[in-house]
Length: 106
Image (cartoon, rainbow, N blue to C red; front, top):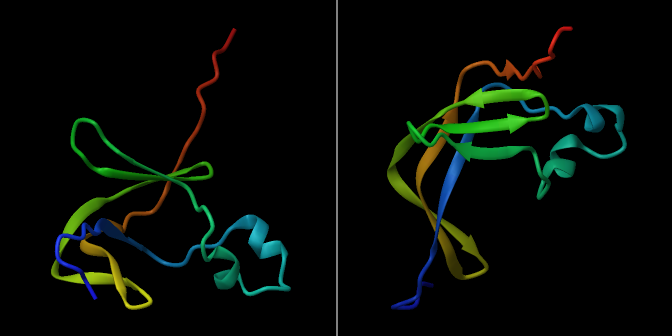
């Protein structure tokens, strides 16, 4: 139920290639990994200043993506209230690139 004049948040959907597995979660088989990921932090989402391209940093890996508009918007519903509308998705299809810190040689 969306009340007139009520502002909803603008959300984005994140689409990753393959599966996501955390090293710390892989060691603990007591709880299903999917359940442990729910509500947790997986990385940092940034946008390039020049191109506006989405960048996702997960640990020591960088994923470069693109923003794609959805054909039909999706509603984010909590209970009987619409809390947000998803109008685009951030697609990360390429393999992650390792982030290597530069070391100066003497």
